[in-house]
Amino acid sequence: MDPSLIEIIKAAVRSVQGQGLGTREQHAAARNVLLTLIPSLCPSVVELIIDQLLPTVAGTGACA
Image 1 (cartoon, rainbow, N blue to C red):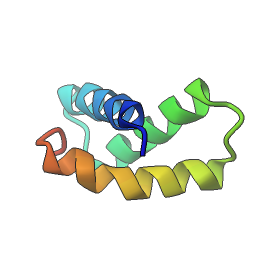
Image 2: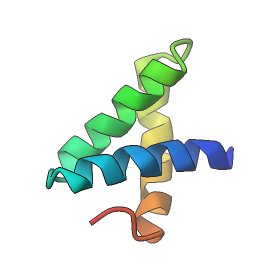
Image 3: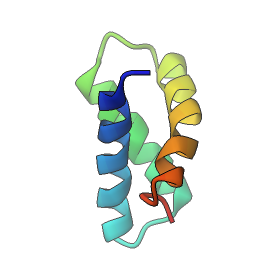
Image 4: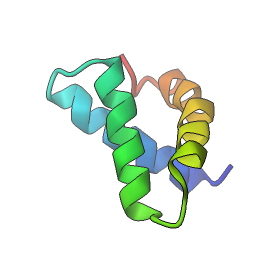
């Protein structure tokens, strides 16, 4: 996977964490950011990307 996707998701997750929001909101933030930045992707593909990359982001300490 493109490391830039990981960085995009990590930034979205950190932003939401900074607001004190939980896992569900972190997932939603990542989804919304990817749909905004890459509008050609369908929502189901975005969900697949997030499901695959969130564990990697969590492994970097970005997710609580």
